[in-house]
Image 1 (tube, rainbow, N blue to C red):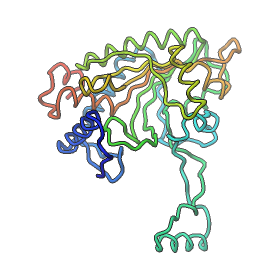
Image 2: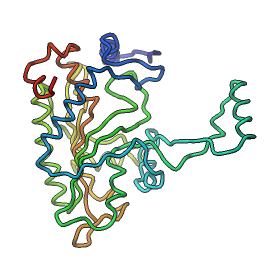
Image 3: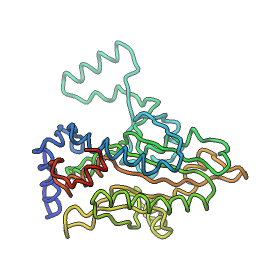
Image 4: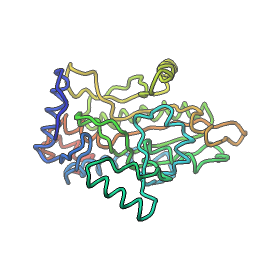
Length: 311
């Protein structure tokens, strides 16, 4: 695997953690940064975490939905994700022509030339945020009191990195609420506390801090400022590299306001545009934080942590 130039002690610490994960067999390298195979023990951690989250949020009575890792391009365009995060987006392209074009493609490939010009954008895109496919299904009027959904699946973000905490393909578990503005705010604040408690019970030194999304371009700077000023996003972070870094986010609690609900014309029973809120857990990130905290041997982890995860 080709390394990027190491320029800081933090870069060195991240690479050392990655190398430890690879040497232990927890992760398996591929030729692309941020894309790894996962071992059976790694999957045991993720499975245990998934079960624990389901139990911890059971009182929500959330409707369970699972979407595939691709969703309709038309819905993607309605989210306006391409305006805010063009650099992270993943557009699926496919070959849709005939034999002549296929021969041209093969000839270009044989000559060592680019062949993807013969591909055309398909009607699906890679799912960037696993809550996005939900909103198209909620179009119209919500039930009295709003709705809560339990989502889980793979997301994709095109940000290749040798930092093992920054994967291009990753799993999320999210608990998403849509309802009145006041109810959405209360939901975010209440379940943020629960999320911190659950992660702390696993022996992680978590902290909840105001945060922002990596909006793209000059216009994105204004969105970042507003998000921080209005405390719309809170990340739950874990310090993984001592004093070299303030902490890495493994979960977040977000007030989305009407950003997505307006795009899909989702309304409350009084006819007003609903607001959304979500609690989101990075499954690989949390598993990696646990490995960084407790070590690569699961049988040496604290007994109470193993019990909570069923290890």
